[in-house]
Length: 65
Image (cartoon, rainbow, N blue to C red; front, side, top):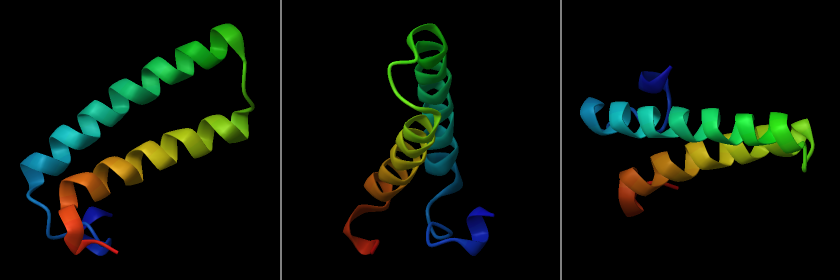
């Protein structure tokens, strides 16, 4: 999937580290959501996706749209 995305030219090591960190974030925020349910499932999904794309854009630098 990565190879068909706009992030295909990022070094695999960078993407791997970024995805690992994102998964830790997702696990943490999901536990928080399960305990408190202080936001909707839709908001949880958007937060997780936003964090993923934000992290990948950050490691991609200014060359990304």
